[in-house]
Image (cartoon, rainbow, N blue to C red; front, side, top):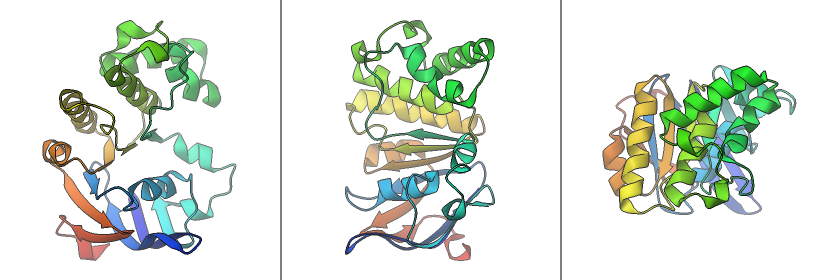
Length: 225
């Protein structure tokens, strides 16, 4: 599903990622742990194709992300969902309009799009909010809408960057439970977090990142990447 080989990423003289190597199999649930500034967001972004590594190779579903042409990246992303650290919703648009946007970009027909949006919102428990402006939602509801937008394409891989970072403990528990449900339905999940409570609830393989390096991997296969 995901294979990284000696991946490094630099911003000037700063090394955001250094010689990162690991692999994730289809259907796994993996927690990318580490403090703020460890490189978690950068790592997710290079997997998603939003950043280009300076060294190494990244294979996602047997495609080399680092070598894809710009026009090819959107086609790969159709199989992936991304939940950003900040909600990044259009506050003046309705919940429906925010979630349907990826389908409009893909050219999905209106009838099918309505069906998929309804199913995604139902899956995250906010189907009754379709006509509400995104900016009028609570923080927990906005995060659920972000997840609905990420899964509306029915992705095989879901990347989530600190999805509980702006939530209180109770809401964070709800989002962790939702991600576990999505994983149980067959989606490969890679979750970046520094929240120990969320890590314990997710009960998945843990990759520890520090100063841009993988310092530990709870998977016994770590050396086989």
